[in-house]
Structures are given as C-alpha cells and as structure tokens.
Amino acid sequence: MGRGARAADLALVVVAALALTLALDVLDLPAPALFGGLLAGLARGLAGRLRLAVPRPVTTAAQGLVGVSIGALVDGATLEAIGRDWLPVLLVTAGTLLLSVLAGLVLRLQPGVTPVTAAFAMVAGGASGVTVMAGELGADDRTVAVLQYLRVLVVVVLVPGTAVTLFDADPGSGGTTVDDAGPGWPAGLLFAAVCVLAGAPLARLLRIPVPALLGPMLVAAGLDLGGLSGGAAVPVPLEVAAFLVIGLVVGLGFDRDGLRAVARTLPLGLAVILGLVAACAGLGALLAATTGASALDAYLATTPGGLYAVLATARDGGADVTFVLAVQVLRLFAVLLAAPLLARWLRYTGE
Image (tube, rainbow, N blue to C red; front, top):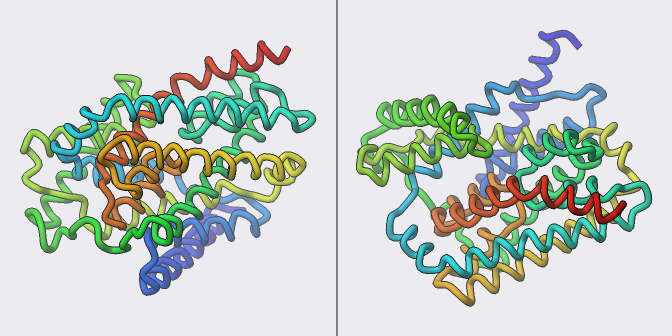
C-alpha cells in the first residue's frame, strides 16, 4: 500500500472514529472519544489485510496532551490525603504485583508458553514498556504483545460501563471546559505546548517510564501546584482529539495475524485476564474500606492497566482524578521496575 493510500485509509478510520464519538456522546456514555477511537481502530485492525498504525509523532503528542490534561487537575489536598493513606496504597500496589505473578503461573499451564513469556504477558500495567522489554529478556514478544493489549482492550471495554452501573459514575460531570474556567484557549494552548515540549525530554533525561505521558504530566502538575499555570488547561478539542488517538492506537494494535499466532493461548489468556481484573476489583474494595476513597475512586485506582481509559473515565465521571492517577502511576513505576526481576525469577524457577 502506497503512502497516499495508507493516509486515505487512516483518514477513513479517523472519520469513523469521530462519528462513533459523536454517537457515544449523544448516548451520554463515558469517555466517548476514547471508546469511539477504540471501536474504529479495532474494526480496521481485524478487518484489514495490511496493518495500519497511527504515526508515532501523533501518538506521542496525544500522550503528552493527556498527561498535561491530567497533571493540570492535581490538587494539593488530595495529594495530602494520599500521603495519609500511604500504607494501604503501598499494600494494594504490592498486591497487584503478586496477582500478576500468580496469573503468570496459571498461564504457564498452556503448552508452549515459557515462564518468562507468561510473566511478561500477565504483568498488569505498562503494556507498551513491558512489550518492549519482553523480547530483550527472551520472551515471545508476539504472545506478550497480543495478551498485553488484550488486557488493555478488556479494561477499556469494561471500565466505563462498570463505573456507571456498579459505582454510580456520572458521565459528563467531571472537569470544566476552557470556555467557563481559566484564562481561555490561547493560554491553554501555550500551557500545553510548554508542558509537552519541556516534559518529554526531561522525563527521558531522568529515565522516567512512559516519558511522553509522565513528563508533561509532572511539568503540568508542578506548574499548577506552584501557582504558575494561571488556571490554564488543555483546550477541550485538543483533549478530545488526544483521547481519540489513544483509542485508535489500542484498537489498531490488534490484527488477524497476531491473533492467529497465539490463537491456542487466547482462551486461557482471556480467562486469566478476566480473573486478574476481578481480583484487582477486590483490591479496590479493600482500598476503599481502609482509606477515605470512594468505591468508584478505589475501583479505578486499582484497575490493572488501561491507564488512558481509566483516566478518561475518572475525569468524565466525576471521580477524584488525582487519587486515581497517583495510585495508578505508583503501580506503573513498580511494574516497569519489577517486571525484569519477576521474569528472570520465573524463568529460572521454571528451568
């Protein structure tokens, strides 16, 4: 497929994603842009003969804008509350890692799946980073990629509906637009540009995981907490576009060849993933019982991955985004730091 044909193909998928986003918004469903992009990307990924991908600079920019959007919501009072609840949060994070290890042990029951492949495939969180590390440590990176993104897909599909039906999330109740708060879209655009352009290189320099997201987020949070942002926020159209792109990236990550290659592993893998999601929801109930967090906040904070879907749902449903983000980011750091050690240990104990 030539460059022009590929661009036209991608443009068609984007148009479909926009149409789905509008339809989901009319139905008052949570995170419509993220979910619309996901559905359009998934349909194209499974239907097309040739794989289609969102250009890397566009993906990086979308991650950065999401980071700025979330970082601008950081609230000092909520951070203090997390500090008071540091022990339950730390224990829940450790519990998630333990559940990932147990899930990997179960997946090893599938013939042909090595211990290190099972470990990386079931690590909860940091799908892109884990997939990159997998090949370097001797895992089957295709199996890891498919199962990691299958987990992300399951989370993206389940989280919005679960938040509304079980935890009374109120779609459309969270956040404010730049039209009725802050200094307006020009300042918001400048604020977003500064955070993205400064944050990503800084995060890479400091070797922070997922630098495109966490770097701009940390810069935005720092400026906001320091009173230097002037109340600026990412303009709403850019924020919507960013979440739509993230949905497309996840959806387009699935293709028929990849699914065929690990078809025999999928039934057990899906069952283990669903079990992991349910077990993490149990950790969420424990977190809510031992802290001042609401059931919705705790559920979103302990969901195993799907960070962008979780943040979009939290922001759109009126949850405490700062609390959710803090617990999710703590787990993300722990997962990416512990994954190589866990994989090596499981590989050596299986030999």
